[in-house]
Image (cartoon, rainbow, N blue to C red; front, top):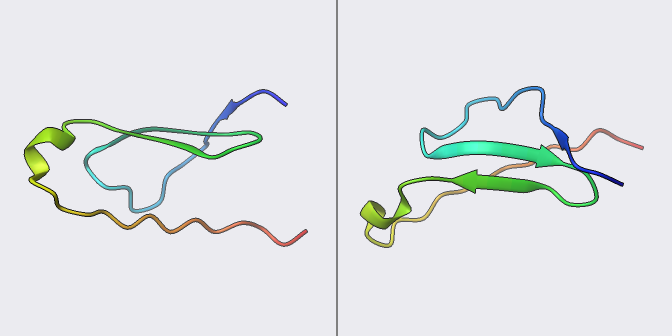
Length: 49
């Protein structure tokens, strides 16, 4: 299964630069070097099967 673009990211963090779905969820972040070890929490909601 190929990756496809995500239609929307709700309440995305300013450092989130992209997201794609497919066999795996991929989130891309930019400018992390200046975060000095800070952590970010990502919550993923999946629809019921």
